[in-house]
Amino acid sequence: TLWAPKDSVLQRVARYGMVLLILAEAGVWIWLR
Image 1 (cartoon, rainbow, N blue to C red):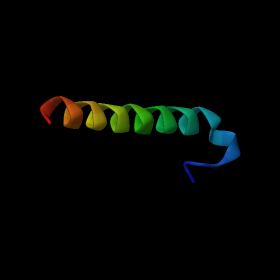
Image 2: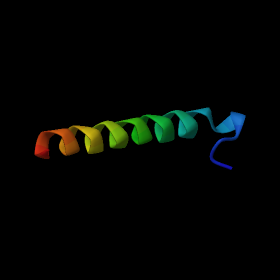
Image 3: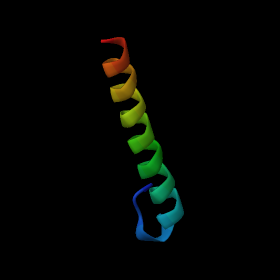
């Protein structure tokens, strides 16, 4: 799976992407509010 220990790079990239996406959505929501 994507969260397998041997796929540490994919896990790191996926987690970083999710964090960026959440921060981006929160920032846009606050900005447009």
